[in-house]
Amino acid sequence: MEAPMHPLFTREGRKDPHPIYRRLRAEEPITRIVEPYRKIPFRLLTRYADCSEMLRDPRFGKDFTKWSPEERQRLRVSDEFEALGKHMLSADPPDHTRLRSLVAKAFTPQIVEGLRGRIATIAEDLVSAALARDASGMDLVSQFSYPLPVTVIAELLGVPASDQDDFRRWTTVLFTPADTEEQLAHLRATGFAFFQYFMQLIERRRAEPQDDLVSGLVAAEEGGDRLSTQELVGMLFLLLVAGHETTVNLITNGMLALMDHPEQHERLASDPSLLESAVEEMLRYCGPVETTTYRFALEDLEFGGVTIRKNELVVASLLSADHDESRFPDPDRFDVGRKPNKHIAFGYGIHFCLGAPLARLEAAIAVETLLRRLPRMRLAIPREELEPSSMLLLLHAKKRLPIVF
Ligand code: HEM
Image 1 (spheres, protein in one colour):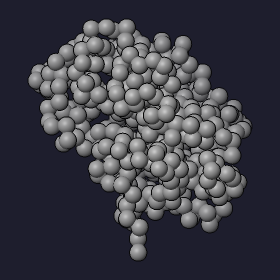
Image 2 (image 1 turned 90 degrees about the horizontal axis):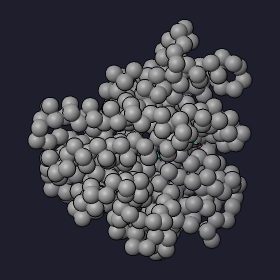
Image 3 (image 1 turned 90 degrees about the vertical axis):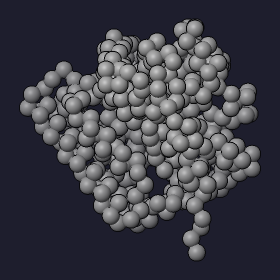
C-alpha cells in the first residue's frame, strides 16, 4: 500500500507549513520524506544548525552525472535535467568553481549598484501602468512582482524582455509537479522549448555580439576549454530562472507580510532608514526559497546522529531554519528592525546565492516604490483565499495577490 502524502505536500501544508516545521524541529529534525509525484525519497533537515552545517559539508555533493545509469533511473533524473541542468547549481568543485567564476564579477554589489537607476525606472513605470489600467486595484504578482525582476535579468543577460510571457509559461511548468506520463511529456517538451530558445539566442550573439552577458559567455565558450555549449545553455537557464522566479516571490511575500502587520507597515513607511533591515526580515520571515535543491551523500556517513547512505538525497528547509526558536528570539514575530538577523534564505556554503546583491536591491526598490506610490494598499480578498503557487516544496509563494489601493 502506498504511504500517505506527507502533510507538507498537502494544500494546507503548502499554504502554511510552519506548524509542521515547528513539530519536525522539536521531534524529528532530520526526517525521511517521499516526494509524492516522482516518488523520490529524501531526508529533510529543519533545524538551523543542521541546515547550515550540511550546506557547507563537502561530504554532500550536487553533480548527478557522477551517478550510474541505474541510480539515475531510480531517481528519475530526467531528460529535461540533462538538457538544461549542466550548471553551477548542479556541479561540484572544480567545475562549480570554474562556472561560478565566469559570471561572479557581473553580480558583485558594486556592479549591481550601477543598475539602481534602471530598476527604479522599471518599478515606477509598472506602478504607473497598473494605475492607468485600473486606479482602484491590481494583482500585485502579475502586474508588478513578476515583470520587475524578469525585465531586469532579461536586460542583464541580453534576452528580449518581450519574451517574458514565454518564460512565465515555461517556468510555471517546471515548478508544477509531474507524475503522469502526460505531465512528464509536457515537462520534457517545455525543457526542450527552453533549450531551443537559448540555442537560437546563442547563435544570434555568435553572429552579432552585443554588450550583454550572453555575448560575454559566448566569447568564453568560443575561447575553448572554459565553457562547453551545454554548460552555456545551462548557465543561461539557471540565471534566467533563478534571477526572477525567486525575487518575484520575495516582493510578493514581503508586501503580504506588511499588509498582515499594519503596525510594521506604518513603522517602515514613516522611517525609510529601516528599508534594509525590513528586506532582511522579509527574507527570514517569508523567504521565497522554502527548501534548497537536492544534495546527495558522496559516501556512507553520520550526520546529526543519523546514518545517511551513499547517494541518499538530502534537502535543507531554509524557511524552517529561519524560524528556528533556538536561533531567532520570537521567530514568528515579523519585526522590520530585527537585528542581528543572520538568516539563510539565500542558502549557505559554496552554492550561496550568486544573485543576492541583485535580489536585495530589487526588493528594496520595489518595497520603497510600492509604499510611496500605494500607501493605502490592502488585500482585496480574504487572507485564507490566497493560494500557493506551487505544490512542490522548493518555492514558498502565492499564485496571485489581489490588492486594492
Ligand atoms: C542559488 C535564493 C535571487 C542566482 C541560490 C540558492 C538559494 C537562492 C537558496 C541556493 C540553492 C541551493 O543551495 O540549493 C535566492 C533568493 C532570491 C534569489 C531567496 C531572491 C529573493 C537570485 C537572483 C539571481 C540568482 C536575482 C540572479 C542571477 C542564483 C544562482 C545560484 C543561486 C546562479 C547558484 C549558485 C551556485 O550554485 O553557486 N539562490 N536567490 N538568485 N542563485 Fe539565488
